[in-house]
Structures are given as C-alpha cells and as structure tokens.
Image (tube, rainbow, N blue to C red):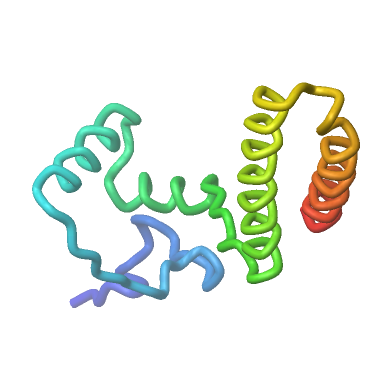
Length: 120
C-alpha cells in the first residue's frame, strides 16, 4: 500500500504574516447605513470588508479645534459684533466720524487672521 506524502501539494500557498489580517472589529449600523455600505461595495465590485479598508486608507479626518483656535474664533465673533456696531454708527453719524475706529478694528482683525493662518 502506498501512502500519500505531502498531501497539500496543490492549492493556495500560505500567506506571509504581513499579509494576514490579524484583527477583527465589530461595528453597529442602522438599516440605512448597512444597505448603503452594501450597495457601495457592490457598485465598487468588492466585498464590504475591503470597501471599509479602502475607506479607512483614503479618508482624511480633521482634528478638533484646539482651545487656542477656539479663542481666535471667539475673538473674531466679538470683532464681527464690533464691525456691526461701527457700521450702525457710520450710517447714523456719518462715515468720517468712525474712520479711525474702522482702521483700528481692521488692524485687530488682520492680527487675529495672521495668528490663525500661522497655526494652520
């Protein structure tokens, strides 16, 4: 009787450790999200897992605003209020009376905008 040596000669070669997917996650979706995922994966011609992997690789997530950036936004909001007050005064009293105030406010706005641009 002959014994068969190396039974697994044919078939798929084993994957290298770097190619193996070692982690499994579970996510919860509502019905609409699930069917949207299913349809988009089908339209792309890939399975759902590969679709999610592609989304993860190609997506860009914006970071939350820092407290410093939030402070700049609050300053800009306050300055916008000042601009409205100056416009109201200009309409009531005449533009020549508020010219100096406009220049000062414009300089403050430029400084805050430069700070924001430097942070980005």
